[in-house]
Length: 513
Image (cartoon, rainbow, N blue to C red; front, top):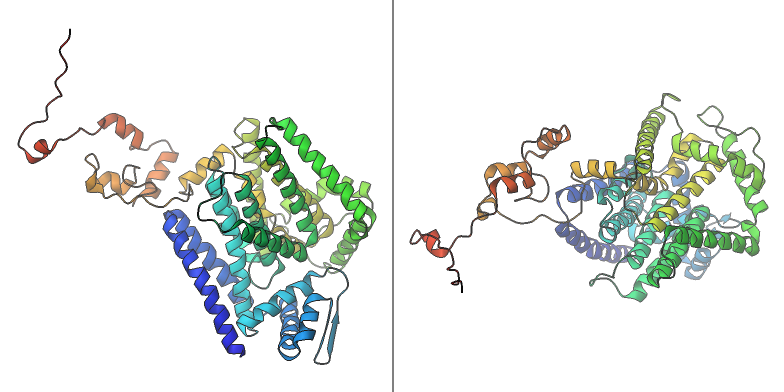
């Protein structure tokens, strides 16, 4: 029975996955096809190799999930009760969690995945890695389709190709489920808010159910990541609805609406009580900070000398916390490989940030819609402050930050200079190749076909790296527009001229009166 159910579930997964991959492949150009292969293979390899034999937190969550799965097979009623509650009691073991535990919830997710993987941690890691990739890929594709004026490669780099994101958001990690669900939810919302719905889209009610499920998964994984995200999406939806009715036009009016939604949301969370009250929230954050600081002795970390559980103290430390999130570890802070890689990454982020700031000052910040840019920027800054205040350990901070980096990179790569660099790298729109043979065009030569001039191939040709390097230095000898001006339009040929029978003649003009 277990083996039959596992076979059915895996066949169903492949029946959905393989046609989707085939559709995506046919709709993509060469660069996006390479990104699809690299991103998917990278996450599957990282998840499979790292968590084939899980250790530490991964091993604990996998063992707890096997306990729940065993209870589901032996005592289905009690197993369902364990899935819905906070207590797991089976086989002389009892595990009790109080409050919203993301560890227990991840164990419940793995318990359901065990039905397909037969409690194999390697397969569970592949499932979560696949889910993370699909969610990120959906958002990258939605951004390119719904916002064609923005650089399509920005989302592709941040969501699919960035190394630290691919490393941490894979395998038996909470970040894999969190990033996958959050990115997919944002993709569904943006697809609804910007532009008409595609003809081949799923039914509206099915998309609504999927959005609710993704929001619940994101909330259960880390509620202090999900609450700001849901609030930002709600504010963005309100602004778009007002703009469509022409009630809100300028940027100032949009900013006021966003500020009003934030203020209303903050007041509403205070009225909800419990963990959402300010004093309870600050005390919880400080408790996490103290515990993380205690276990970070002898390892790279930072600390705040006078952090107190008050709103004023948190506001005073907010700039430093955000700076620590985006810049630590520094290059040379530790000789361990992971901290060296983190220092190099932070150096690159600082360069991109300086480039984006300079472009913004010069009026070349990009074409991202104003409300969406403000929402993404606010979300990134709020998360950076929360992570910087609660996570002084630099290794843990790098892992938590992997959920934030895709959207932060999306903002940094919106400016015109970054967009031009992405186009030079071939990371343009994800359209597929135009199937045109070189000999079918009367003005096309094999030289143009090899150089990828644009008359025969929309992307890059056989010697695209050489032509791109020469174009960067202003020494490109061939350009499609220059070629069209130099050669002129192709002459109109008649059937007689092609056959060598008669020369092409001009149409006789009417006699003047």
